[in-house]
Length: 324
Image 1: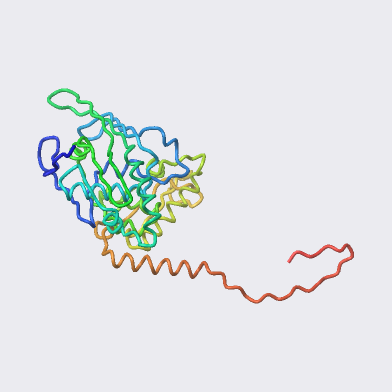
Image 2: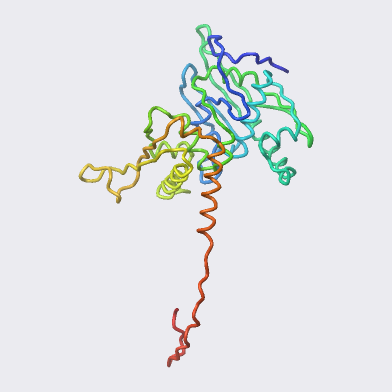
């Protein structure tokens, strides 16, 4: 059933400003800070729901998902939101070519990507949300699935739950996500980037390793802390090279002297510097930097073989060959 979306409103009936341009999509902070869209490896049990006891004017939020990825699934999620907000309706229709164009899929890859797109839509249809909200003095229990629809080789029809739109409208703190920026980033870079976008308290922002492990939903048995910290360190270096962050510093666990800069101690926190300007650069400049960095890394990875001298045959009494 079509549900008119002339305005997204909050719980008090006030209109919300929602961006739905091709280059920006407004997304509630809740969807960015929770491990809803993630890296599907080394994670905890993904069958368990995500539970938020209290958030703003709602309580007992429970989100069940189907192993959603920060790459393809998140891209399709943003595509659906943009279509909904631009059409002012929860019922959207689109041609396959239109979808491919908007997601910047190369023509040689389109036949294969259609299979990926269908899998992503099916996984998104399994997002199930339940929450409670106080309405007229009593607690109201709401539950819904995100989408339902039909897809063919040439077109698609998707219906977004009107209850999702109401849930969306009640959530405060909307943050703008630019899919063109995401297109330059790999999966680890994407997660840190969206986390930084929705955490801008000051120029320097603080992220404990425990908090980062929660966002990445890391199972310490499958990925030891030392390996995870290296991943975060390397990813921050990449984001700094791309100009998306100014810099970062690792805070170590306190040593016996009460100092937190002992290199022998484990890292317990990352202090990261960035601003609105660094997080939202000109896309042309970002792409140029990305291409330069990739070219540099590709050059470094090429092994230049030097001519090797033939080792002299050394005769020994026992006939063993000498290790070169």
